[in-house]
Length: 418
Ligand code: HAM
Image (cartoon, rainbow, N blue to C red; front, side, top):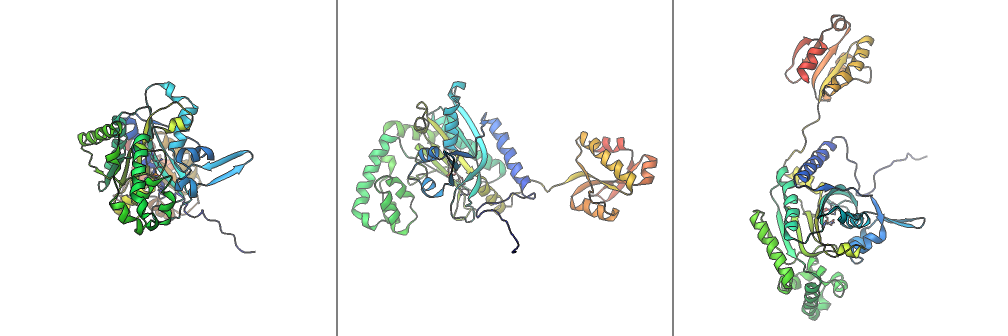
């Protein structure tokens, strides 16, 4: 019989014990900053109805056409969520969150799934944090969303990035622009890449996003949507830019920026980093004023963004930013003999009760091996106990970093370390 070897699926990764502290550190930062912005956390299921994602994200998008993990069980079609905007809107509509009053300022952290071809910074299971502000079309909401996104990177110390922004217009502006774009591209239709030819009729704006070399010449000289925005969309965009300036958030206007989902209207933005290589998008988002209605709710404007957490960690590595200190434990109880071992076991909860983290050997090892293990566990102190110490009621507390030791009663140790 061949030996069985089980592994994670391609593009999916375990978060191992050495890595989990940085995840927790980032999650803590997100929760803390979200609280300062008065955003509330929302958690939704990993599995959604396939139809929601098709409808919400868009049938013609790469995500729906090629990248969803979907399956059928019984009468239901399930999809592993590829993103959270459509699911959060589903939840908003399903639970009538509008009845809570005001705009809903929601944030989330969690895994997403896309069956993409894995490479550095591109995984099949990856994690996002993000915000969805549902119920406001005020440019203040767009800018608060961007400000929150920037604040996370600023706090972590990632400063080397490029915020690009654009308006993809409202449906009226977009229809006008699409027809101008088609008229412009039509004479050269045969020279466009196969993919762009496919997008020409239904989704010509996505051609602007093409990476195919044969398209670049046409993209470079293409008309820009800004010249075709109606007054509403144009004023909205002007205000977003003005408010960003007021907050001293640097940005560039990128007339070619179109995003990969169909739900965007008006504001679209992306944050890229030169520290990331080819998958250089740290985060992206924009307005989706029609999605709530599309999914069955009342017409409700909304804006949001999502950021890739693995990509944030890649940027941290490039910049030598440690998000979490190395692991440590306050006290490692080193025991010699059976009575000391029992004393150790019953002393652990007493230390922990006082907020002192504490551990001991579980393998019945020699004192020397326990000291070595205490070093490996990065213990700040070892508490050394044998029959003599038990008799006297005084124990040796060794400061592992300073290599100094002294004797204390247990109360003395607790008083010193708590
Ligand atoms: P997105 O641009 O598809 O937008 O994803 C946001 C971020 O998730 C990307 O900028 C990237 O950092 C990360 N990301 C995406 N795919 C992968 C992958 N395969 N591997 C690793 N990281 C990845 C959205 O998902 C929208 N829901 C954002 C949004 C929220 N728009 C409005 N509200």
